[in-house]
Image (cartoon, rainbow, N blue to C red; front, side, top):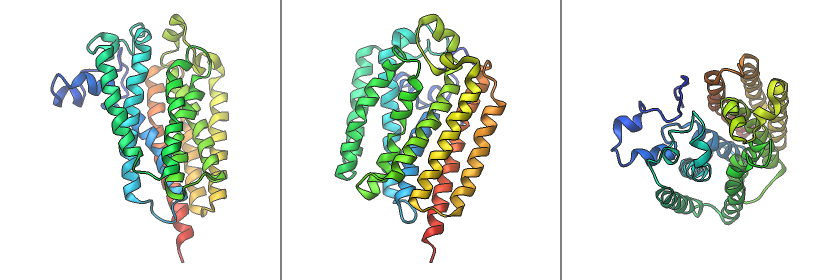
Length: 309
């Protein structure tokens, strides 16, 4: 779950495994899908895993875990491709993103659209492996997926739109086991929403200078020097709703012990965060992989404790 946290003028470095291992004709597609930068895959997958673990009476079904893992890879890749198709003109004007395949012209929009269709069809195949309610829920998420790349054009809170979109798997993980929605699943989704609102605000501080110049919006720009107090509110809200989901699902004390560890990790993020240091913002953003893992173990431990005779 690691990526380089070094400062770079571009988020498309030529020193990763894609450039070292893959043939030249595949490299632009793999970079377009961000497969050399897996943080987003983990952050999309963890809410699915949380929902599965919260709903399961013991260990989650490994087949369901595998399906959600494959789905996270495919849909995060599809989301990156769609985002870059929509934002290719903006990306060409931002130092961090100007070397992305569409912005740099190493892939054409037509090639990107074809790749997107392949990814979406593969994602549909995975989705159809779930129960009927989960399939419908997955289809319902496409509206948010379509909306997100445009959000930065009309709202100061595109990170909130990402929070609604990126954590849909928390609901789907629950329904894949139970076939229905519950208050516990909704509380988990709410907690995940605030978690994403916080970590993507941190991420957005990398681009705030360029975003101001090109006229796109973000919570980093909207909150500015008040970001840290708001991060405490966002992460505090996330912890509140996570605790509520555990209580509604009847999890044991191990869950709350894990939640305490998660709280410490989130507090560390905010206290040590350097808002004007892009490399530190990236590092703190990436540390949410560990936050997601901590919560996964907390839910699993709390659930297994209640299943003991």
